[in-house]
Image 1 (tube, one colour):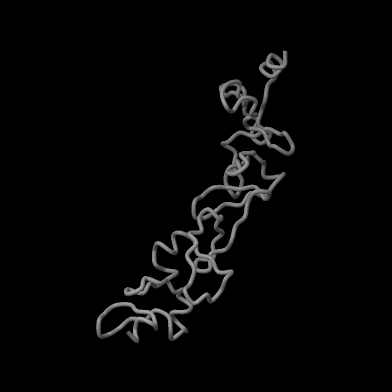
Image 2: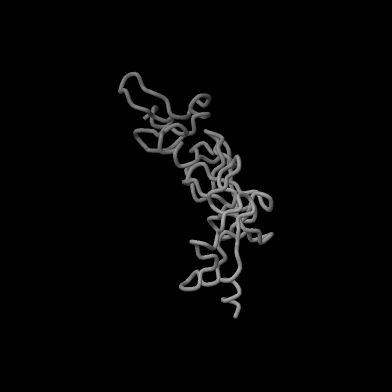
Length: 174
């Protein structure tokens, strides 16, 4: 009876008034997604289509971690600028990249640290590490030093005019 009730009612988007149930399945009735309510905010239970947008993108957003959808009124959703996934405030554990200063989820932090241990709270996102913008590596020992240390610390990686390689302070004296 409940399935008949759900199929008989007209569900419309509260933003643009389009009919959501006309060509779309409002509730998944089979498989591992059985019972999932599509187009529905987890908090207020209001329905919105995926075509309606606000200044930050789609009006109803899916959290990548908990897989709950939230409308823009009920919960702020943060985006990881590295992977592009969105997360609700309950699931996001983002950090700010020390180099580009963008919000980065912990899945996009490669775990590279400066050999000088200049700041335990410093993190770098994958693009900054891969682009070489955040670190310089010693060509001899392959240790990484952040750009701040390379600019200010005598023991960090420096360019050698003689051999034309990058070397840290310990490898330069060898």
